[in-house]
Length: 201
Image 1: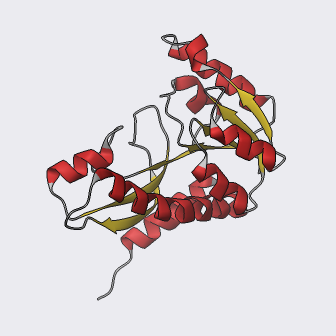
Image 2 (image 1 turned 30 degrees about the vertical axis):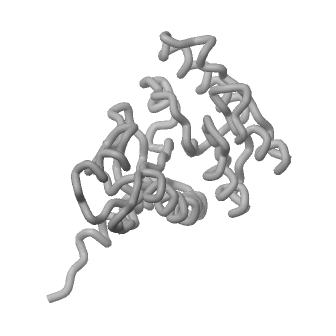
């Protein structure tokens, strides 16, 4: 199974994926100065840039260009790793059920771009990290794995983010490795459903 990673920023999640020795064949960034590109090049992984500034506000054309970049490398599975541009339907058609994402909350709670800030403002004592299948509706796809992170007295959004990132950098590669081993993201969904439905008597 050939993985294409979508990244926008410094690439810490990408680095965790690369360090896990997963079959990443291309890293696609939406800006030319993303640190993720440097990490990919250092690992000997092919890179591509689809500069969102050249497409937006036409998000559909941008998405089609991203799909083309992934298709050029025969990608089977897409891992969004800090990719900050919302994508349109063509990617979910081209890679149906095979686009994964990570989100800094225990979905379905606190969807959207400000999940940590929203959790802090709501006064909850626990948030976390979710690995899920991405669908056109943002942060609403099937959940593959979650792990809780406590919110402590005196925490800031930044300190919570850091603890979530520690979990994310371990959990995301684990889920990707399971999907690669299974050969089908839906196997991960079925495993999750069995765990959710199991119970003692």
